[in-house]
Image (cartoon, rainbow, N blue to C red; front, side):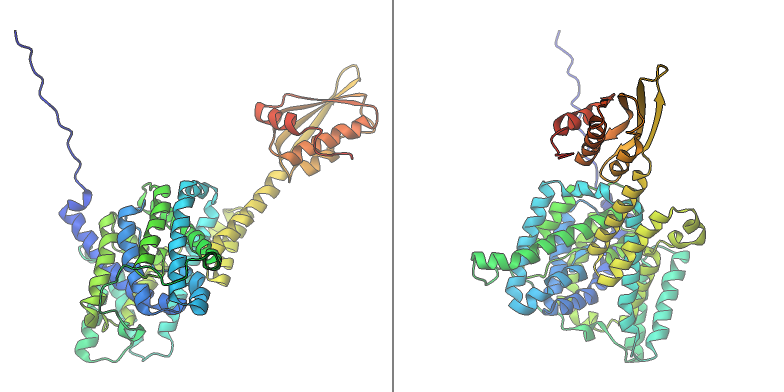
Length: 499
């Protein structure tokens, strides 16, 4: 009897979500809106870096396309940014574009190395209050960046901005089939062109390229002197770029209620910067403003929108440069104002929230916002916020150590019980909580409810033991948990206490 052959079951391949007609339309339109918003930003950042506008535009194209493939956070937009422009501006001014490009390539390589070393895991040490401060500072910077476009301009700019704002606020209440920012840009462009209204346009921001970027190497001497020159700028590019990108990725995770691969995003940023450098771009990182346009205003959720943002950008500035040049800046200013307003965490500054929130949390948020606004650098603001959070946390935990004591019935032994976390901030107060002069000859320190974290804590225990020893009294430390016993046994008596 021949065996019965069971049918072969082939696994069903999952279809990419962007192949759905509805999702595809959303992603395409979102990419187009982002591309339009990227143009004036890329030109402005090029000017800030002291390079030709084409350098920023090409960087935005290569960054967006590469990160769409290599990145770990779908729908996040990476392009030329102001933070990177501030880092590379001195190098470009003093040594020229080729040295800037070399620094971008080296910075990308450093980002890949940091990704391999697990730098993305450091994101767990960024508190929520720093994230809130990051978001609020970002919203303020986005809004402040639009003010120059509203000063010293024809009066018609103001009603145009008002009309664009009205479209973006009102249209989503009627339909979400087409992104409101795109409708606002198209309507204002048609109105200004047909009516012949003379207002500032995208073309006034700088010359648009008329050719594709080309692959090449920077023309620099490949020597140790060159490496020494560009290395500090490359490290700055790597650190600032990763910090802003990972913070933005975490923000998008929260908005979309999804998880992203931060390690992949880290090395993806590095690969994107390397590719950008070889194509003559100024480097970049995640752009929070354009990402918010993509994710919040347009509803994009996949890599397709990021990829198309780069492709559309190149098509718009190379093939349709004459059309893009007539887009009124009023439309893009209005888009960015909406982005700023929607990005700001208004709940964090309401009186009810501020009243409930611990003072330390509010101080950390304000430190992040204040430092960012003072330096115009989100990375420095985040570092300041994290440092403030560390200091406040250390002060808070330092006061949670408690020492209680009892005398045994026969009066020959004093038993101290230590409760809390012992580290450099809390252990300094520990020494003063023992009665060295009046205690009996035998003292027991019970560590059941304590944990020893560092050498400072071991040194404090050594100091306590030494103070009793000078009075001819013995001390026994008991019930150390395993990690605490390990560090105590390793360091006790080796720290020079009492010498």
